[in-house]
Image (cartoon, rainbow, N blue to C red; front, side, top):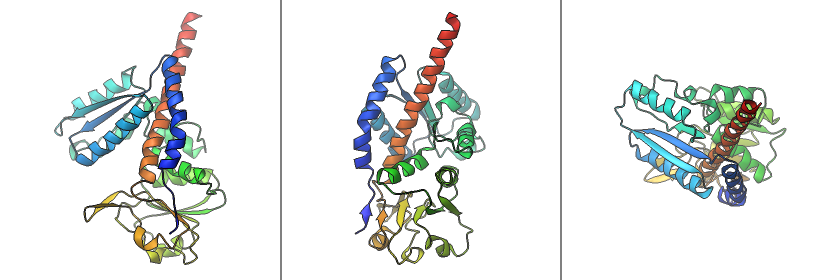
Length: 295
């Protein structure tokens, strides 16, 4: 079998440092606190939220879930987001997606205070990626993927990376980040013709298309040297599977992320890293304001 790129060893090694930083921020006057706004009671969303709650507990960060009725109107929804944006105790927040159809006309990613944008979807964050600035907030899944590669000592610079999927959450921001790290990036999508002609030439394939077991043996190189990053989390025959046909390609590649246990946990961990960054920024602004008022 190829090398499995698991999240757990990386998270176990990095978690103590995050805990120390969280405690330090609290001692300096601002405890990290994540607030999640959920509309309805989607079971999958609740599972994701509980994973984030548990990770907050591990780094001693506060956590709040605001659950709104499925039928909530625009006015009440927007007022809730505004209240969270202005809450001085909340240092990071996001709206759990998807939201019901009647709210989908709202550009939710731009509603969040950019200083609390732990998801990393606000235009302010994306603009920094265009400038090759990775020092601030970075969208969680792309950040988790880059960390996973780096911690496994997989070189990005100079490599050809093929990304399947051009979503605003994964594909597009990841392409900007990898380009900034000097990879050659090919961004493929549902209208890409002869997909296998691109994927077979890749050093690294990132599959983020949301189709169970989409990446097949015919898409990969016979040389067995490729790295497969599987972003997908899908249900098939009552099992959780990725976007890659794991059982049929695992022995034909150099390394592959398992599902579950790969990109998913790295995404949640990256959310915690972003939460500490937003807390640090808010605390600095607060300290600067106090200094200015004392002059």
